[in-house]
Length: 131
Image (cartoon, rainbow, N blue to C red; front, side, top):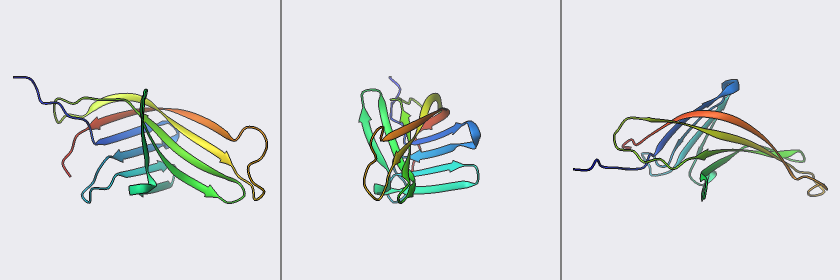
C-alpha cells in the first residue's frame, strides 16, 4: 500500500542576523498566520495581512513589516518550494527570504528605481500539523 501524501501547513525558517519566520497556512480559527522576528522585533500577522501567491518557482508569501509615510514601505517575503510529505515528520529545506524597500514621498513615486532588495539565505522545516 502506498504511503499517504499531504502538503505541509507549517513552515519554520531561520536565517542570519537573528532573522526567523514562521508561517502556517491555517490555524485554530482557519486563518493563515505569519510571525516575523529580527533582533528584538517580533511582528505577528494573520488573515488578509498575508499575501500568498503561487508561482512557477514556488509559493511566494509576503507581509508588510514597515510602512513609514514619506519614506518607504518594507515588505518581507519567503519563497516556499513545493513539498510532499509522507509522514508527520518535519522535512528540512533551504530557500530565500527577500526584503523589499519601496520608496515613497508625499509627492508620489520618485524618478528611477522604485524598489531595492536584500536577499537572505534561509534554512527551514515543513510539516503538516492538525490545528
